Length: 91
Image (tube, rainbow, N blue to C red):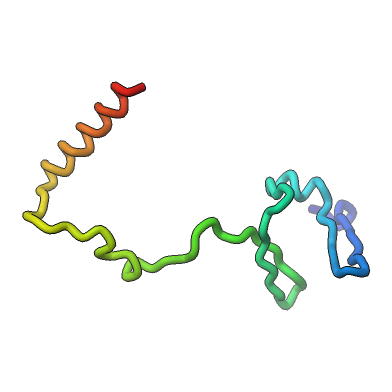
C-alpha cells in the first residue's frame, strides 16, 4: 500500500480501534475474530489467534499407542486403500 493509500483510525475513549472494512475483508476477519496483539519496534502487530495450540512432535508421540505386531508398509497401504474405497462407495 502506498503512503497516499494509508488508512487511518482513531482510538476511542474505551481504547477501542475500528479496523477499516477493506482490511477486515481482505483478511477475512469477521465479527468475533480473536487477534493476538504484539508490540514491535515499528508499532503494533495484529495476528489471528491460531486455531490450535502449538505442539511439538514429542508432545504427541505415542498418543495412539498400538499394542501388537507392527504393521508393514504393504498392510498400511492396503488399509488406506480399503478406507478410501469404503468412503467412495458411501458417496
